Image (cartoon, rainbow over the protein chains, first blue to last red):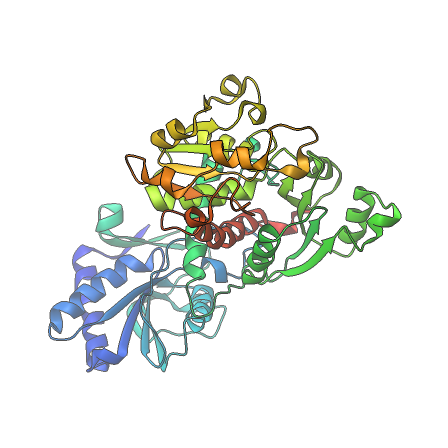
Length: 174
Length: 310
C-alpha cells in the first residue's frame, strides 16, 4: 500500500483544480458542472464549493449524473443505480464532467452518452483527481488532472473522502 | 445487490429487500422519464415477448413502453388471431417463440398459476402481468410506489382495499406487498365478495361498513367489480352496489380527513367510483399509470441481469 495524496495535498489539489476551472471559464453563466455518481460527487461538491467561494457574484449550475443505465457491462453484473439530478438544460453549455479516478475510460464513455440524452452541449471537459494514465481502454483524456500516476492493472486506487469515509486520502493498493 | 428471484411470478415469493430494491430503482427510472430523451440503452441486447392471453390496455401499453424506454426489442403476442385458436398449447407456443432467441417473457393469462407453470419448463425470465385471480405483482408494486410518493413511507401507512376482494388479483398482490412492508391493511366490501377467514390468512382487518373503512385509512385503493369472473350472483344489482359501496364526492367530503383515492383501472364509473371522485383532486389514478412505466422498467432491468448465464 502506498499513499498518493494525504489530507493536506487533497485540499491543495482540489483548490488548484477549482482555480483552473475558474481560469478557463471566466464567465460561468455558460458553464455547468456535473459530478459522476457515486464517487465523483464528493469531489465535485468540493470543487463547486471552492468555485462558489471564489466567484461569489456568479451563479453556477451544478448537477449529478448516474451512468448505471449506460454501462457496457450490464449483462455481466447487476448494478444498482444512484440518483441523477440535473435540473437545468445543458443545451449549448460548456460542461465540466467531474470524477475521482480516470482508469479505463469506460465510465466517461457512458457519461458522455448519458449527457447527450440531456441535450447538445457546446463543449465537454473532463476533470479528475487521479489519472491512471497507462490503463486506458478508450481514447479519452482529462482536461484537468489532480495527480497523474503510473499503475498496473492489478493495482487498485482507493479515494477516501471525509464526508463519506471519515478521512481524506488517496492510496494505491497492490 | 440483486433480486432473490429470477422471475417475478408474484409478490408472495419476494422478500422485503426485493420490494425495496424495485421501488428504489423505479425512483431512478422515474427521473429518466422526465429527461428530454426518455430512453436509456440498458437492455439493448435483450428481446422480450409480451404474451397476452387476456385483454389489457394499461398493463400491456405500460410494459411495452417500459421495454422501449430501456431499448429492448419487443414482440407482441395476443391469443386472439394466433395459432392458439388452432389448438396450440401454451408450452408449445412459448417454446416456439423462445427458439427465436427471446430472453424474457411478460405474460398475462386467465388461468391462475400459468406463469408458474411456464417458469418450471422454460429457461427465460418470466414476469407475471396478471394470472387469473391469483396475482398482479407489477400493479401492486406501482400502487406501493404511488403510496410511497404520497405518504413518504409504507410502514404504518393505513391502506383500505375496497370492493371485489374475492376475484381481484390486484387485491391479493397488494395485501402481500403491503403487509410485507409493514403497512396496515383493511379490506372492505360486501360479505359475498370477501373470502372467509381472510383476516387470519393474511393478517388484514375486515370491515363491511364503507364509511368506517374510509374514516380509518390514509389511502383507499378501490377495485373494479370483476363481472367477467363472477359466475354466480354475488350482489343484487350494480345500482345497489353503488349505493352501499360506491364512493361518491359527498361521502368523501363527510370524512374527517382528506384521503387519497387509487384505482388500478379500468374504472366502472358510477359503480365503485363516481366520476367526480375518479377525476377529483384526491384521486391519483393517472399518477399510478405514469408510475407504472417506471416500476416496470425497474422490474425488467433488475430481472435482465446476468443474461449470458444460460
